[in-house]
Length: 218
Image (cartoon, rainbow, N blue to C red; front, side, top):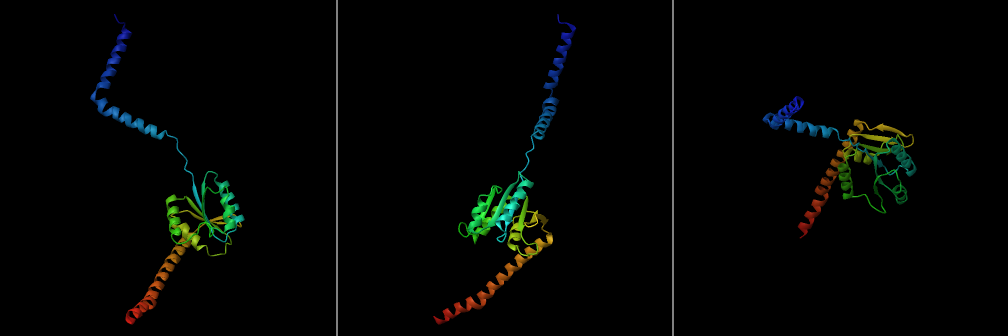
């Protein structure tokens, strides 16, 4: 004969089996439990820290020694960042910066190695858009030098919202204002329209008359 304690255990097991075999548990409770279990595992996954991508644009007139100091500054500021650099360099500067360990991805152009012209500009632009940088930094020499238009335009067309100007002589960072961005974009649009009008004028008043003269001579 079973003792009273064994009978209670057996009764409890039967009740548990009835619960597990019930339609309420099989079609409602168990699916909900599985969903909650999946959510728990998803939340418990370790979060991977995203590496910051920084694009540094070196205009032609910025010296290599100032560029190297700037690279050291950004590497110390964020040791885990992936630093890209775009630069159009003479041969001597090309060799110096190519061996710089603070640059992870070098996008260098030079008249002697890889000329930046024609469709190369479009290839560069597509590459920058595809990379999706977190920050773009333009190296600036003289604070009162108002150019760097190509560098600023390239920074804007990269699609990055955060654009900073880094003054190499003072090691000072300044965000490029929205007014400057608008002005650079307007200048680019104005230049394109002006070039288009010049081509139209040249076609109407030079090319077409020459073509007509050849036709009438025949």
